[in-house]
Length: 115
Image 1 (cartoon, rainbow, N blue to C red):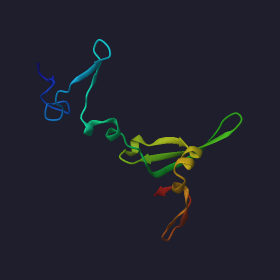
Image 2: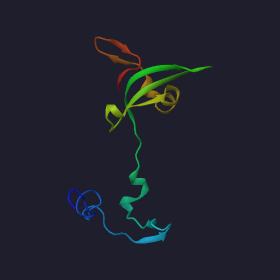
Image 3: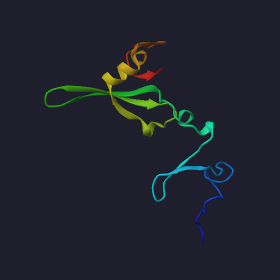
Image 4: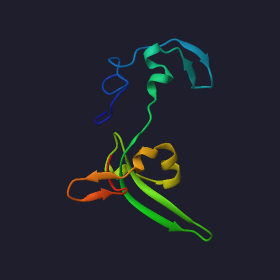
């Protein structure tokens, strides 16, 4: 078939990257638990995203309160993938990101800018 990529020819699932692993347990009709080598353990497959820049700030007015949000650019993400997060939660997790930075010839920058 023209334009159809078959398993095993190209991509991340090709034998160059993935080899057969022993099935340790059958979970369902088509789901299995595999015995993976140590380099593919769950610990090595996770990482924490770190905010590298605050792009924008806003305060949303709800019926009874106001909620401050910041638009964050995360490490290894494009600007299009920036997310709005609650300012209070980000201040708890990354308090050093809200310290004023001194920018030459511009004075102190309160929030916006690179870290």
